[in-house]
Length: 320
Length: 285
Image 1: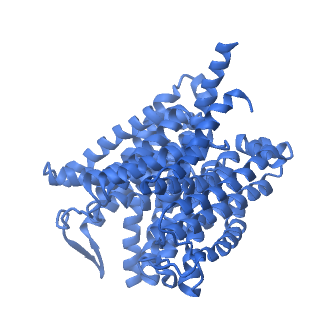
Image 2 (image 1 turned 135 degrees about the vertical axis):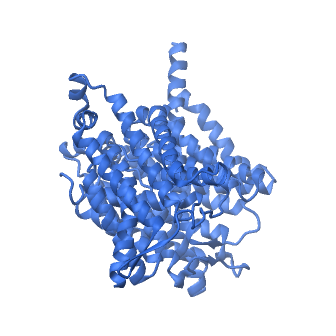
């Protein structure tokens, strides 16, 4: 490991291990939410960061995962997590049916289409009475077996989420170094150029969407398992997509650890503002999110990862 | 008869949609940037109208132009402070910048005005006119007529005046325009100003007959997207025709399938359109 990477990696490891040594339930809960947010943001990052396809519609995948989990519980009496595979399967179907045609659109057009699809999906779910309509659905109230994954503390959730995040980041890392990683970055930096160089653009965008959508759906299922409640807004609302975009953009879109870093910064921030301002505080958090998005877009589209690169380059130069 | 009634209601609302959508299409045509906060500009204008009436006791004859001026300034500010710097940047920055702006506007409005729905008194522009059985409210009639005239005015401004030719020159080719002595920057700032002013008028007009809430903008953003997409990106006459069509589609689908389905019909149309003809029905490929 190169020395300039040692410090951030050490900090990250200490942060990730810290919930095991803290006995504050609030701290452990926030840590679990950080990792959960990092899963969906990292999943978004595969398509939005590496391949440069800025989706505002990933809430659809998240909602599908979350609804599958609680439908499995309310309709079939299964443990909620049993719905996760269904959620992933539906996400694959959506990727092929909706994602593939929308990939003909580039840049702004793609983002507009995903925004509209998400709004459409939320409206349809609101009027879908089988799945609770506008009211939503509850998870199990009492733990019937271990499979319900109903824990009193947040630490078990933290461990589960961390395992899923590790798998996703390992896959992303492999992808980054494979042909697919190069193709996606080529697509991200110029679609027409990539196409003219022989990159099978639409096929690889679809691969990226499949990976991205499947893990976002899984994050949705995990969310439903932990929170035990889902309604159209918390599953399909546009803010779900906003969370993924702002975390990936702040940490560094198109970098392996960027979304995780973004989540580590932003989730505690929004939890703190919720605790500080009370229930209506989520509004204050989104003002801050909006400002962060504009500042990142205006001054530093590379995000925190870019700052680190610049800082460490300066240090190396000074040492030489 | 009911059909005629629905169509004329739809056309009047559609004219207002056409007005604020022509602002979006102007901005897109000038610099290939989509304003994800466009509907929130309309929301801001509605609050300007509401504030002007309740706090300053100004009537529609004053608060409609006032809202246009406020929004013009706001649009220029957004261009100078934000858009000018991101429009040459990476795609991610271009797309998320106005999205961040939308978040800030919406949640600042929520913070300042709370989530309550408020509305201007329905009697502000009161009365209902009967045209051989078709009953049209004065507020909607006024809004539709003003919107229609201003959208046509925007088209004439772009096609019949020297200023309009300069703006079109910049939208066609920045560099070439700069070479013949047209500075692109003021033209683009002007496009943002005019685009925002169109939402200023439209929002103040909508406030005459529609409730205001901080989240009302999302629906308008999507309506503007559909309109611009249907009419062709960058085309003001296209936006006019498409806006009218969408007003009618909304009004008919609300009647046939129930009010919640009107948004489903419009968003669904948008998604379908993007797949079939991404350049819009009247747009150039």
